[in-house]
Length: 140
Image (spheres, rainbow, N blue to C red):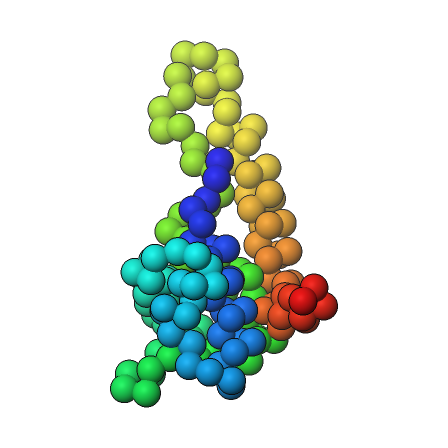
């Protein structure tokens, strides 16, 4: 299973905003150049981040700005803002109740899947944009 690239693009966007918002106007064209993608894709993701309250987009003067400090934005916040799927795994709808595995697969797997999802969310919740920004600056 693989998620879309929206999460990594959104994280890239937020790192650029955090790094450059006080130095220059951070526009969709500027971001598209950094990410090497179409500005329309950037605008769509900016809209999702704005709807989630993570960024503000200023009309008129232009540019995107963080709505809260980078240490208050987690990877889980970003993920939930841009990914449509709420669960990591999608269970097949109708396992065969006549099969011994088919009739028990949910009782065997459901709790384990929830544990895996919780572990991922807990880890994402412990990583902040501020931490990623520090890592990015170290690698420049």
